[in-house]
Image (tube, rainbow, N blue to C red; front, side):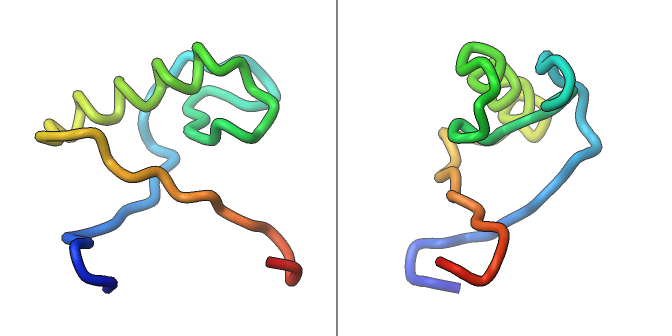
Length: 66
């Protein structure tokens, strides 16, 4: 992992507040989902995992063009 990175995870197992077609637990702020819902989902995940600080959220790219 890059310097300063202590771990990483991906999940779709937690409950969230996003509506279809994004929900229930969408963490992507560039997906077209309501940003308030995304921020609430991130807060719920952070609380559930008892993280000491805000994680660094990555921008996932689907496809070959990066």
